[in-house]
Image (cartoon, rainbow, N blue to C red):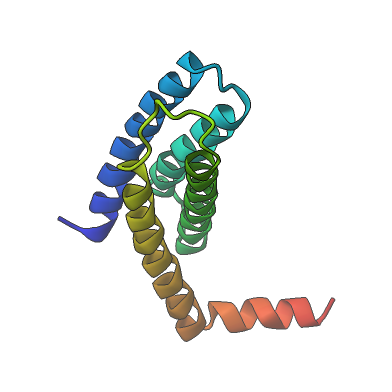
Length: 133
């Protein structure tokens, strides 16, 4: 299985897990943080899905970088919900390792893409264009 296929599958499964957590949080009358969690948590898979339709490498990397930001945000909301103990009847223990793995995988993808852009000259061209402003 290719790395991007694995990210696609894991981010989709994680979105399903987040939706289940969201439902559990709603039952516990937690409405504010749960909405943040479901937005960011499902945004990971949406960004990865959008990257598959990218028109070029730069757009692909932008979509993956957005998915990485959503993964980091999701990690924040999960930690906040766990540590605050607002909803003690909801089990977050499986979600945190899963999002950590997604952060790791997406970080590797984004960093390797940045190195390839710099190596191909795209990064230097972009820097040069900014310097002329």
